[in-house]
Length: 121
Ligand SMILES: C[C@H](O)[C@H](O)[C@H]1CNC2=NC(N)=NC(=O)C2=N1
Image 1 (tube, rainbow, N blue to C red):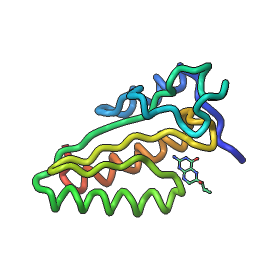
Image 2: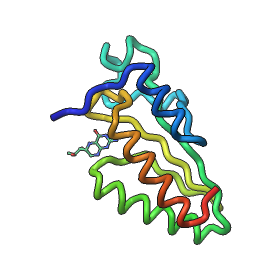
Image 3: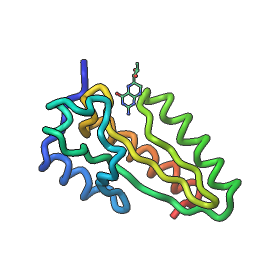
């Protein structure tokens, strides 16, 4: 069953439970349905994003591997970026036309839990 796009209220309620996470519309957030009505009438669809800082590059790389493992388990994948001592994610649901769904928030919660274990801030 495909994931349903969340309403603005549902998104705000879920975001309130995820300190550090935010919505960004950075121009890459057009999703799989770019140019279609499903993407929001032409406006770039927001993605759920967060950046973490780690103690070293190697520690950040380890977090990337751990996130990749969880993403495979959930079969839901973010745009995952490794910096020097940072890890950044941006996620939306491709199969929902780039909308935010509960799959995105489930991934965010799982990443929060593993990031804490790594000492990410
Ligand atoms: C076929 C496979 O289940 C799909 O391509 C999955 C993989 N990971 C995914 N990740 C995200 N973010 N959105 C999806 O719709 C999605 N779909």
